[in-house]
Every structure is written in structure tokens, then in C-alpha cells.
Image (tube, rainbow over all chains, first blue to last red; front, side):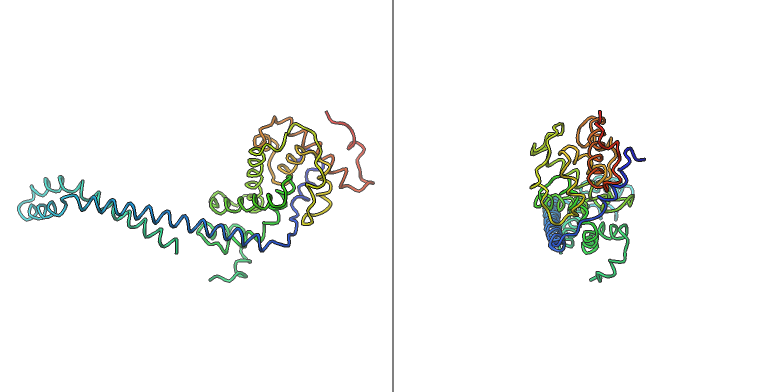
Amino acid sequence: MAEHPFEFDAARLFAVAPAFDDSAAFAQAVDARLARYSRVRGWALGLAGATGLIIALRAVASSDWAQRASSWAAVVGDQATRVDMGAASIAPQMWVWVALAVCAAGLGAGGLIQRN
Amino acid sequence: MRATNHLDRLSDIELASLSAAGDRAAFGVLMARHSGLVRGLVRRMGAQATLADDIAQDAFIAAFTGIGGYRGEGSFGGWVCRIASRLYIKHVRHEMRYELMAETPETADQWADPGLSKDLDEALKALSAAERLCVTLCSGAGYSHPEAAEILKLPLGTVKSHVKRGLDKLRRRLAPESEEPAVGNAPHG
């Protein structure tokens, strides 16, 4: 719906793209900026992933997960009722940290892949 | 690596899908198709050539990073033009370089640009800054009058009046003298 009789003609005139001699240079400049953006983004993701991985591994290492796991195995060997109690006390802490470590490793790997 | 001539045969929407997956070669083809339109629009809004190219570059970067927002409604070039025009308005507003309510005509130097089509750009010289912005937003970037009013933070009536006066001036400048409408010279309230 045109509110002015010249509106369609003006839109048609504006739609004609002017020719620029330096179109290739312009495209190269944008592509270079996009490449830089991708590199920075990849590094940022990789750094965040690596930091998360270190934090998660430190948390796992400082926890007594190995001892708890062995006691959990012993409990499994003993009786089923104790398995439930052992799993309930061990699983929440240990598996959260392990899952966090896996996620961080995945994030770091993703960042590295994207960077390359 | 994908052959460029293969990409050349794809539609804008297909290229945008590839770009969304991170294919910069596909995005390069989109740029080759539409950069002239985007660069031209920003210059026609009143930007100097260097600034216009900076704004156009920023618009294409924003288009690449937010390409999921392109739904294929309208041309890709039109979509980037909208991004570019918003970026330019933001820049101008930040720089406080214009007073939209003023009716000061532009100087010819600001428009010296061999890359643009002469007729339209010669005609645009006759428009005030406000008229030119309103006309390029509506006729060039495809915004409706209410959208342009929102972008420019102006009353709708003011935008409509700038567009009307601007289009009248363009028509008088661009139409052959024999087709010049008698009402075109009438003052507008």
C-alpha cells in the first residue's frame, strides 16, 4: 500500500545496487574480520572449557571418591540393602563432579575443534 | 573445499543455511550478491564513504553472527540493509551529528561518490538530512512509516511528512519535465 504515488518508483530506484570497484576488497575485509571473530570465539570457548576441566579435576581429586567407590563395591558384594544406602551416599557428590569434568572436557574439545 | 560456482547456483536461503553452519564461503557469496546494495544504502543515508563501509562491514558481521534471525522473508540484502540502517542511525545518534527536526540542506561535498548511480544520488542532494533518512529508511531499507518513526524516535506524523516532502522532491528531480505533476510543487502542511 503506497502512501505516496512515487513510493514504488523510489523503492525501485533504491533497489538498484550501485557498482563498486572495490567489492572484492570489501568482501575480503569482512571475511578477515569473521575469521578473527571465529578465532577469538574458539579461544574463549577452549579457555573456558580448560578452566572448567581443571576445576572439576581438582574437585574430583580432592574428594575421597576412590575410597567411596571401593566401599561401594564392597557393599555391592555384601548385600543389596546396603547397596542402596551406599549408592545414595556416594553417587550425588562423585558423579556430579565426574559429569562436570566430562562436560568441561567436551567444551574444551569443542573450542579446540572450532578454532581449527 | 566447495567450489564457488556451486555456491553461486544456490539461493539466498540455502546460502544462509550453510552460513548458519559456519560456512564462510557461502556467506562470501551472499556478500558478493548484496554488499553493493548495503554499502549504497548507508551512503545514501548520508554517511561518508569510509564510514559507510565500516557500517556495512559491521552489518555483515552482525548478519553472520545472527543469521538464524533471517527467516527468508524478503531478500537477504534487504535484511542486511535493515541491520545496516539501524547501525547507522545508532552511530549518528551517538555522534549527535544531525538534528532531525531541522530543515538544513546537505552540502554537495558530502555526496561526492562516483560509485553510486548518479540520478538518484544527485536527486538526494535536494533533500534535508531528515528527509533523506526517512526516505532511505522507508524506500531503501523497506521500513514502514511506524517502524521508521520508532527507529528515529520521531512522531509518526513527522516521519510521514518528511517522507512525503522527500519523495516529492525526488519525483520532481527524477521525473522528466513533461511528466512533472502540477501538484508536486504545492506546499505541504
